[in-house]
Length: 88
View (cartoon, one colour):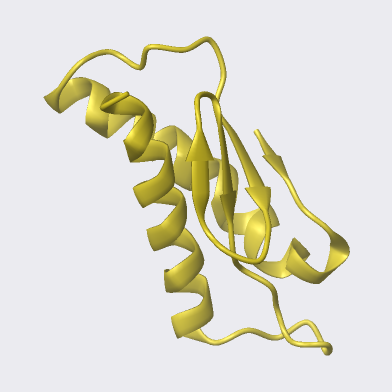
């Protein structure tokens, strides 16, 4: 699941939950099964993870547009932070 403010809607509504699900499936296939019952991605100012929850950047511009770099950075941080749950 993903939680985000309206400023992050253009990126998070399309990519956040998909990135979380893809990360859990891929890491589980190649390492250990995901060790927790849920995974949550929360839009924030920077990246940080805790068991079952991670905080990630990813806001769009005021007009709702975003660059390919902003989208890719959000996805990259989500994958990175969710991935930490496999080594805790």
